[in-house]
Length: 98
Image 1 (cartoon, one colour):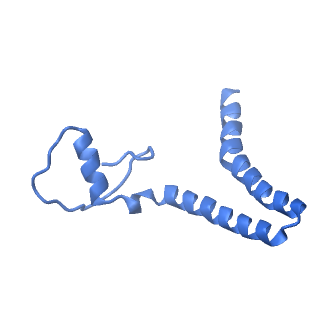
Image 2 (cartoon, one colour):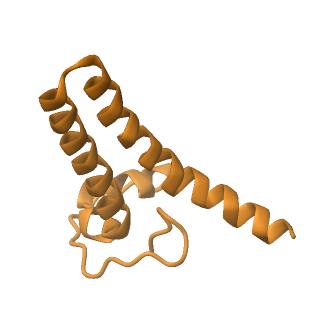
């Protein structure tokens, strides 16, 4: 039963909330008499939501050398030599790199 509630909350947060906000961005300006503004707001909001989703899916492609330096410095390791990123993969969690 707990899994069903958890799945429902995930769907509500990751699907319902963005969809509801998109509908608000469309219907409120239309009701106020600004249909072109509603269309442009909805297009911009949709682009932001899609770009955010794609960034989460392809997060490994955006991991840079500076990000690696920050993660190493968090561990208290000081790098003195130059290095190159040979391979970049994440295991299971978001931001879990090796």
